Image (cartoon, rainbow, N blue to C red):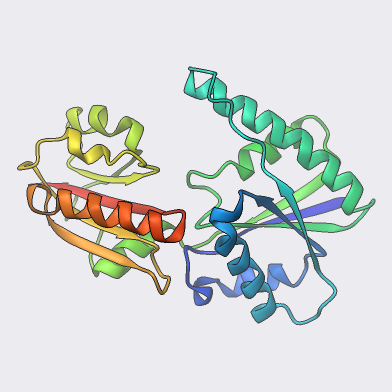
Length: 250
């Protein structure tokens, strides 16, 4: 039977890989990479560098395929994403059958941790439920949450407290619900601007763990504008940005 390894690769530093992840890399015959265009070419290159650094033989190969585009004409966000997942699932099933034969092992190198705001496991679960003809393992990785806390040298939670992990899309509602410590991911719209700037302090990080890492910390009123400007400049320079932040109610 075909086998798949879903390997968390951390968020930018090659040394963030665990020993378990390195051993998993060395079991893979074919790595599948979704091509998201020239703007994110350096993300594909980082995957190659990781493999060159840690894989002990040269028998593996990469298969790159164009990632399906989300249909912007579909207004409902969940429907738009579900269609995108379905398109990926069909593509992946064909790739597995073509590239892995009856008993090969494929691999996905997942940015951060596969369990946190990544679609790979959800799509594989759906394929497996349909009788996809494969087994898969999951190797955890260092997430953006962990890297953010490490770079700022903080604990995410306060004594006896909890943290709420959310997205920019849900931030306003989750803050209004009384959550005091919010870690925000997937925020392309600088959604912190919808909040009371005197009610929170912010710990922000972009390109965490990489040579391009950017950090900022302060009361929201003091740092909001500069973070938005730095974020826009970094996106213009690199063609992409991955960032996350902690909002802590004062």
